[in-house]
Amino acid sequence: MSNLTKRVLASIVMIAVASLCLALGDLAFWLLAVVVGLFMMAEWSDLLKVDARQKRLAQFTLSVPLAIMAPGLAAGPGFFALGLIAAAFFFLTIVSRRPDYGAGALYVGLPVLSLLAIRLQEDGLMLSLWTMALVWACDSGAFFAGRQFGGPKLAPSISPAKTWSGLAGGILAATLLAVLMRWTHHLPLHLVMATPVLAVLAQMGDLFESALKRRAGVKDSGTVLPGHGGVMDRLDGIVPVAPVAALLILAPSLWA
Image 1 (cartoon, rainbow, N blue to C red):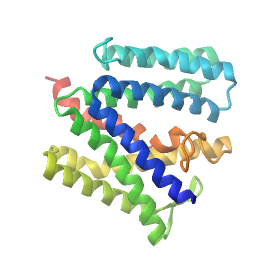
Image 2 (image 1 turned 180 degrees about the vertical axis):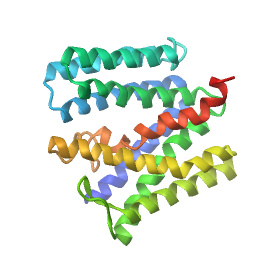
Image 3 (image 1 turned 120 degrees about the vertical axis):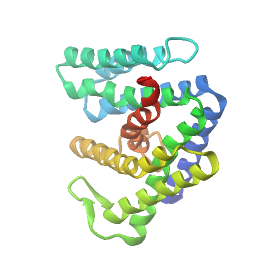
Image 4 (image 1 turned 135 degrees about the vertical axis):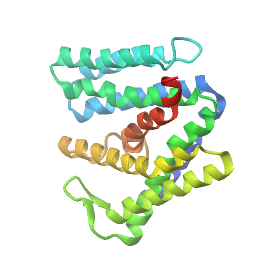
């Protein structure tokens, strides 16, 4: 089986699992987010080359805010959970004297909090799907446009395979998705207009993770996903997109 075939099949399975958990409800989506978050925290620790004890400590520390976010069972994804994420960052930074190690709590915790908060909103299913699907569309558009057109490299010192044509293809694919959702599901106009910017953020998240891997001297953040490497390799675009999307969606209620 070719790497491209593995990549496509893995993408289909991951999208199906995420969509199913979204449709099943808040608790199912939270359980998925917890599992994914703990995998990402482990991969973050591996990229920083910390020992097994520190990796477990990071996962245990992050599990506290993740547990608090449980909808209907605990405080949920709100300001208390946000405070615990910040506390996890400071705790891990202090015990290790490594801010980059502690930053893993922010890298993982903030997008999880944001996605869960979006899911709890009115029309949360549609809004959560838009948040994640725009990243999926951007990744796919960038991948196929880059392969088809090639051209100047986007950031050759960080990720030699990425091109400006890929970036344009990703923005176009994400924007077309948002327009389609506006037509079929009445996606708010300000979210449609923000989609191209979020697509750029998704690509920046991809580049940031590529820089982490280059510094660590590895090709992938892990091996759990066939054709993709680690969980971070697949979700790096959602990390910066989810918090900004949450602000765009929640801003009116936050200041009401």
